[in-house]
Image 1 (cartoon, rainbow, N blue to C red):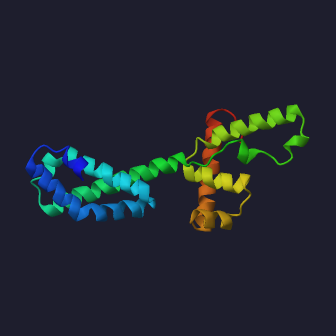
Image 2 (cartoon, rainbow, N blue to C red):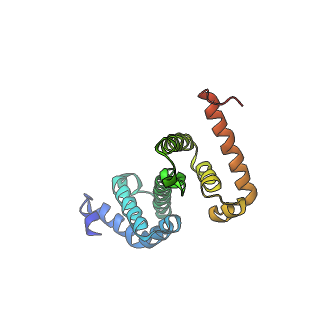
Image 3 (cartoon, helix red, strand yellow):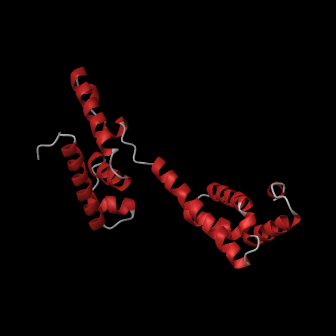
Length: 185
Protein backbone atom coordinates (compact mmCIF):
# COMPACT_ATOMS: atom_id res chain seq x y z
CA UNK A 1 0.00 0.00 0.00
CA UNK A 2 2.96 2.30 0.60
CA UNK A 3 3.63 2.47 -3.14
CA UNK A 4 0.17 3.90 -3.68
CA UNK A 5 0.41 6.41 -0.85
CA UNK A 6 3.60 7.81 -2.34
CA UNK A 7 1.60 8.78 -5.42
CA UNK A 8 -0.88 10.85 -3.42
CA UNK A 9 -0.22 14.44 -2.47
CA UNK A 10 -2.27 15.38 0.58
CA UNK A 11 -2.89 13.68 3.92
CA UNK A 12 -6.63 13.82 3.18
CA UNK A 13 -6.13 11.89 -0.10
CA UNK A 14 -3.91 9.36 1.67
CA UNK A 15 -6.48 8.84 4.40
CA UNK A 16 -9.29 8.47 1.86
CA UNK A 17 -7.26 6.02 -0.21
CA UNK A 18 -6.29 3.98 2.86
CA UNK A 19 -9.92 3.63 3.90
CA UNK A 20 -10.96 2.47 0.42
CA UNK A 21 -7.99 0.11 0.17
CA UNK A 22 -8.56 -1.59 3.52
CA UNK A 23 -12.33 -1.76 3.16
CA UNK A 24 -12.58 -3.02 -0.42
CA UNK A 25 -9.34 -4.63 -1.63
CA UNK A 26 -10.54 -8.18 -1.02
CA UNK A 27 -13.96 -7.53 -2.57
CA UNK A 28 -12.28 -6.03 -5.63
CA UNK A 29 -10.06 -9.08 -5.96
CA UNK A 30 -13.10 -11.35 -5.66
CA UNK A 31 -14.93 -9.48 -8.44
CA UNK A 32 -11.91 -9.62 -10.76
CA UNK A 33 -11.21 -13.26 -9.99
CA UNK A 34 -14.82 -14.26 -10.71
CA UNK A 35 -14.53 -12.72 -14.16
CA UNK A 36 -10.99 -13.78 -15.04
CA UNK A 37 -10.58 -17.05 -13.10
CA UNK A 38 -6.89 -16.30 -12.74
CA UNK A 39 -5.28 -15.11 -9.51
CA UNK A 40 -2.41 -13.18 -11.11
CA UNK A 41 -4.70 -11.40 -13.58
CA UNK A 42 -7.15 -10.52 -10.80
CA UNK A 43 -4.32 -9.05 -8.72
CA UNK A 44 -3.15 -7.01 -11.71
CA UNK A 45 -6.67 -5.67 -12.24
CA UNK A 46 -6.97 -4.66 -8.59
CA UNK A 47 -3.63 -2.88 -8.86
CA UNK A 48 -4.72 -1.07 -12.05
CA UNK A 49 -7.99 -0.11 -10.38
CA UNK A 50 -6.19 1.44 -7.43
CA UNK A 51 -3.97 3.37 -9.83
CA UNK A 52 -7.13 4.59 -11.52
CA UNK A 53 -8.50 5.66 -8.15
CA UNK A 54 -5.32 7.65 -7.55
CA UNK A 55 -5.72 9.34 -10.93
CA UNK A 56 -9.30 10.31 -10.12
CA UNK A 57 -9.14 10.73 -6.35
CA UNK A 58 -9.91 14.44 -6.62
CA UNK A 59 -13.24 13.63 -8.32
CA UNK A 60 -14.48 11.08 -5.80
CA UNK A 61 -12.91 12.10 -2.50
CA UNK A 62 -15.94 14.19 -1.55
CA UNK A 63 -18.50 11.59 -2.61
CA UNK A 64 -20.44 9.38 -0.23
CA UNK A 65 -18.65 6.11 0.68
CA UNK A 66 -21.13 4.02 -1.32
CA UNK A 67 -20.47 6.19 -4.40
CA UNK A 68 -16.72 5.69 -4.05
CA UNK A 69 -17.27 1.95 -3.72
CA UNK A 70 -19.53 2.00 -6.77
CA UNK A 71 -16.76 3.73 -8.72
CA UNK A 72 -14.21 1.12 -7.63
CA UNK A 73 -16.55 -1.81 -8.34
CA UNK A 74 -17.33 -0.45 -11.80
CA UNK A 75 -13.65 0.15 -12.51
CA UNK A 76 -12.71 -3.39 -11.50
CA UNK A 77 -15.49 -4.90 -13.60
CA UNK A 78 -14.65 -2.87 -16.70
CA UNK A 79 -10.94 -3.54 -16.45
CA UNK A 80 -11.59 -7.25 -15.86
CA UNK A 81 -13.94 -7.58 -18.82
CA UNK A 82 -11.51 -5.66 -21.03
CA UNK A 83 -8.67 -7.99 -20.07
CA UNK A 84 -10.93 -11.00 -20.55
CA UNK A 85 -11.85 -9.82 -24.06
CA UNK A 86 -8.20 -9.09 -24.93
CA UNK A 87 -7.12 -12.53 -23.78
CA UNK A 88 -10.04 -14.17 -25.56
CA UNK A 89 -9.12 -12.47 -28.83
CA UNK A 90 -5.51 -13.59 -28.41
CA UNK A 91 -6.73 -17.14 -27.89
CA UNK A 92 -8.56 -17.07 -31.21
CA UNK A 93 -8.75 -20.40 -32.79
CA UNK A 94 -5.38 -20.90 -34.39
CA UNK A 95 -6.08 -21.61 -38.00
CA UNK A 96 -2.59 -22.56 -38.93
CA UNK A 97 -1.08 -25.43 -40.81
CA UNK A 98 -1.22 -27.76 -37.80
CA UNK A 99 -5.00 -27.85 -38.00
CA UNK A 100 -5.11 -28.32 -41.70
CA UNK A 101 -2.27 -30.77 -42.27
CA UNK A 102 -3.26 -34.19 -43.37
CA UNK A 103 -1.66 -37.18 -41.71
CA UNK A 104 -0.41 -38.61 -45.00
CA UNK A 105 1.27 -35.46 -46.32
CA UNK A 106 4.55 -37.37 -46.65
CA UNK A 107 2.91 -39.53 -49.35
CA UNK A 108 2.14 -36.50 -51.54
CA UNK A 109 4.36 -35.04 -54.19
CA UNK A 110 5.72 -31.46 -54.05
CA UNK A 111 3.02 -30.13 -56.38
CA UNK A 112 0.16 -31.50 -54.27
CA UNK A 113 1.84 -30.27 -51.08
CA UNK A 114 2.14 -26.78 -52.59
CA UNK A 115 -1.53 -26.79 -53.65
CA UNK A 116 -2.56 -27.98 -50.19
CA UNK A 117 -0.44 -25.30 -48.58
CA UNK A 118 -1.96 -22.57 -50.77
CA UNK A 119 -5.47 -23.87 -50.10
CA UNK A 120 -4.80 -23.99 -46.37
CA UNK A 121 -3.48 -20.43 -46.44
CA UNK A 122 -6.57 -19.25 -48.36
CA UNK A 123 -8.95 -21.03 -45.99
CA UNK A 124 -7.10 -19.69 -43.00
CA UNK A 125 -7.36 -16.16 -44.36
CA UNK A 126 -11.08 -16.55 -45.00
CA UNK A 127 -11.81 -17.98 -41.57
CA UNK A 128 -9.83 -15.25 -39.84
CA UNK A 129 -12.30 -12.74 -41.29
CA UNK A 130 -15.05 -14.32 -39.20
CA UNK A 131 -15.90 -13.56 -35.59
CA UNK A 132 -14.35 -15.88 -33.01
CA UNK A 133 -17.43 -18.06 -32.32
CA UNK A 134 -17.84 -18.65 -36.06
CA UNK A 135 -14.15 -19.56 -36.39
CA UNK A 136 -14.35 -21.93 -33.45
CA UNK A 137 -17.46 -23.77 -34.62
CA UNK A 138 -16.23 -24.22 -38.20
CA UNK A 139 -12.77 -25.29 -37.06
CA UNK A 140 -14.19 -27.84 -34.63
CA UNK A 141 -16.72 -28.99 -37.20
CA UNK A 142 -14.46 -29.39 -40.22
CA UNK A 143 -10.86 -29.61 -39.04
CA UNK A 144 -11.48 -31.65 -35.92
CA UNK A 145 -14.51 -33.44 -37.37
CA UNK A 146 -16.52 -33.03 -34.18
CA UNK A 147 -20.27 -33.56 -34.09
CA UNK A 148 -22.70 -30.81 -33.17
CA UNK A 149 -23.21 -32.44 -29.75
CA UNK A 150 -19.45 -32.59 -29.11
CA UNK A 151 -19.02 -28.95 -30.15
CA UNK A 152 -21.92 -27.89 -27.94
CA UNK A 153 -20.39 -29.65 -24.97
CA UNK A 154 -16.92 -28.22 -25.71
CA UNK A 155 -18.19 -24.66 -26.06
CA UNK A 156 -20.84 -24.80 -23.33
CA UNK A 157 -23.66 -24.09 -25.79
CA UNK A 158 -26.77 -25.92 -26.86
CA UNK A 159 -26.67 -28.06 -30.01
CA UNK A 160 -29.26 -25.75 -31.61
CA UNK A 161 -27.07 -22.75 -30.87
CA UNK A 162 -24.07 -24.51 -32.45
CA UNK A 163 -26.12 -25.30 -35.58
CA UNK A 164 -27.23 -21.66 -35.86
CA UNK A 165 -23.67 -20.40 -35.40
CA UNK A 166 -22.49 -22.84 -38.07
CA UNK A 167 -25.20 -21.71 -40.53
CA UNK A 168 -24.42 -18.03 -39.91
CA UNK A 169 -20.70 -18.69 -40.31
CA UNK A 170 -21.25 -20.44 -43.64
CA UNK A 171 -23.47 -17.59 -44.85
CA UNK A 172 -20.84 -15.07 -43.81
CA UNK A 173 -18.14 -17.04 -45.67
CA UNK A 174 -20.37 -17.16 -48.74
CA UNK A 175 -20.91 -13.41 -48.49
CA UNK A 176 -17.16 -12.81 -48.24
CA UNK A 177 -16.52 -15.01 -51.27
CA UNK A 178 -19.30 -13.28 -53.27
CA UNK A 179 -17.91 -9.89 -52.38
CA UNK A 180 -14.49 -10.97 -53.61
CA UNK A 181 -15.98 -12.47 -56.81
CA UNK A 182 -14.95 -16.01 -55.89
CA UNK A 183 -18.43 -17.53 -55.52
CA UNK A 184 -20.74 -18.44 -58.33
CA UNK A 185 -23.47 -19.80 -55.99
